[in-house]
Image 1 (cartoon, rainbow, N blue to C red):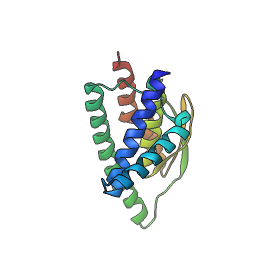
Image 2 (image 1 turned 45 degrees about the horizontal axis):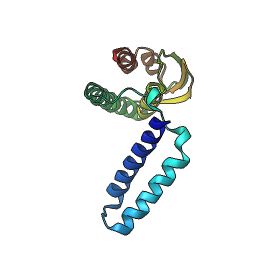
Image 3 (image 1 turned 135 degrees about the horizontal axis):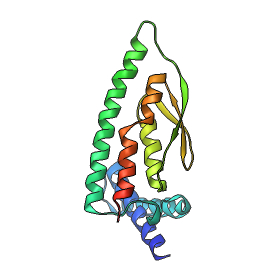
Image 4 (image 1 turned 90 degrees about the horizontal axis):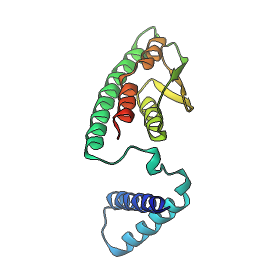
Length: 165
């Protein structure tokens, strides 16, 4: 119960920081409106928040790991942008849309959410359905769909879960 309140307070603080960044103002009226909005959003969405049991522990090692994960994801997104641009600009437009089922062995909900969002952020792929152990992904080409089954980011997520204490 205590961790639920800490989680709610943490989300409220993050939302307030986001409010300040977007509004660009530190004046009291704007801060009060931002705080009220942050509390409202955090409180009424509290059942959708990922709990401490569902996410990796916050440690320095985890932070460095996430930075590496996002750097690798950024590289994959840039590569995929060029591949999709080549497909679209090619005179024959060799697009072969298909659905690929990917088996994932991730225990934490946060890992599955991160994987589903990573797939969707990568141009040419879209997570259509995410289950406990299976993901259904739409891919622009058969080759890109097959490449997802051995995507290194899935292994990185598995390694992160195993590496936890």
